[in-house]
Length: 227
Length: 333
Image 1 (cartoon, one colour):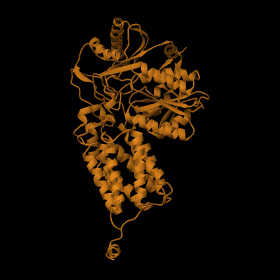
Image 2 (image 1 turned 45 degrees about the vertical axis):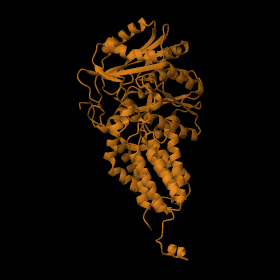
Image 3 (image 1 turned 60 degrees about the horizontal axis):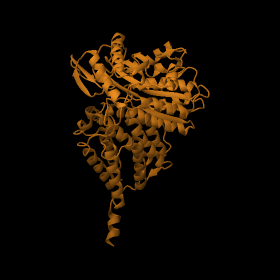
Image 4 (image 1 turned 120 degrees about the vertical axis):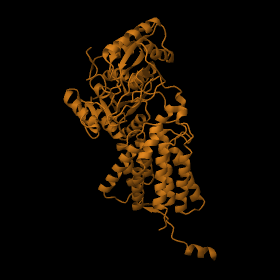
């Protein structure tokens, strides 16, 4: 029975993410936003109002301060909702409601769960993205964060459906989000302040898609390693 | 940068403390989250009117809180949308049992933050309606942009809807009235100089000594075209023609003409603009039956003006004339 032998000798693959893993992912994203604050702001200065990095950094540092101060009750859903409400009240602009909604809807989907299975994560991501689409009314190709999130979600679901390990699925999700982010460069913006530039918005990478790629990349890096 | 400030990042907070000290008879100012609320709120049985937006446009919106106009205003950072927690607190503070109307200027951030606040308010059992003001004819091709920006008509809508709410009109009636004002108002602005956001410390855009920007937004967003400085009469014509063609305004119409200062232009020049506007409209057979002249929706120290025309009927005229008592607009019956 070669198959059984292969399974027995394979390294332990992560089958779920626990509350503390979710915390590490949030902190990793905060660190990535901090590290990319200047470049996010420069991308936004080219086609928006030049504050995306500053706003996201202010929001994520408020999130980290909040998480440091409160003892977790091990409810992943409640944790994600706390992140969402903190972003809503500290980021402002369009990024606050959009990232706030993403986390709030993920939190609702994960409500009461102490850990997330791969399918739970896919379901939470799907719910969060649906919230962003509903809030911002953006569709793929409008040159927004949706252009990184939707390919990331679709790649995750396809990989899990095809029997990939969670770690592989997360890596494919992040890679698809990265490609989606790069694909925003030639697009003409149809939403947000960049849309007022019309054709002049083409040739620039979308700052929202860039920060959304950081979010999925942080998940792959935090949860993608073998246990 | 030469400004009358203490610290760039304390401008909004210190100004709010100033407003609280100056207008304690009219408003209460709450901090964290920041809101300006009518002193006698909530008024039982009256629809509550809430607006808000980035700071830097004073007296809009905080200067319009008081009897006959807004019940609360949510000031954001300079040129940055306020957040839903501010709007939710304001909504709760002014809910007198007849529901709350959010008057929202059409900017992506403002619209989304107010939508979240409306969801949160409704989940707490408060009836909330929102009307988005989008009257700036400088922005075209609405299908492929975030749509027209909300500018001068916002001030007129807040006044007219405030009067209707004082008459105890219902939430759906006040919201319908607000949509009617938006549907009949059109605006366009221009800049002679840039503004300087305190935290940025340098001009938002560069404009040559002899250049002006036609179609400027109230945050210094680019307009339709950059042209050479011209006599006021020519500039008035450049602003007014697209407004007239857009609605369109026609011979025989009666209008409210609002000549707004952007912050750095003296009243003397605004009256020069009004004179040219009055003559131009007369040539088109359009009669100004009400007017408003002065800095009411500003863009920090930007020099320039905007023109807003609102087509009037008996209902809008009556509500415009109704008494109002705020820091920024005040008249008796």
